[in-house]
Image 1 (cartoon, one colour):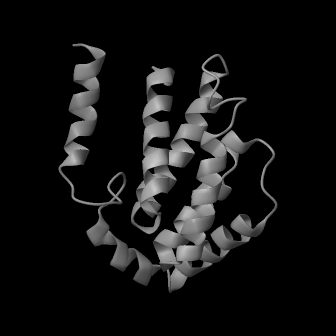
Image 2: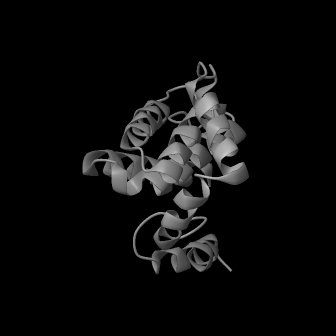
Amino acid sequence: MTVKTLIAALFLPLCAFAGHPRLFFQADDVPSLREKAKKGPFASMLREIRKQAAAPPNDNLMYAFALRNEAYIHLLTGDREAAGRAAQLALRLVDNQEFWNNPGSKGLSRAMGVLNVAVAYDICHDAWPTEVRGRISSQLAYAARNLM
């Protein structure tokens, strides 16, 4: 089995789903997630995510979770400002010259950055402007080729 065949077998089924998110759940799941986030232990989890998102960002951008925290806030509340903050962080990350755009850099650091951006892209896709989605999508493809 070639690498391309393996990738197609693993990821092409995701293309069958319409819209985003689709990595961990589907768009149809979002309303019930937002309802859950309003009560019980989920509300306290959301408060903790907000607290962490408000903290000063980690200096190591590839391992900073601020990007995913902003995406989670958007996912659980519909807050478009959080999606906008996630977009700015994602753009900052894909412009990083030390790791993201340096194929000779530590692969695990690049992979962690790619994971952070991919999760945020999937969750915030519909809230991001078309040009941001296009830039992030092409940078994810670039990173995937370089990680292989």
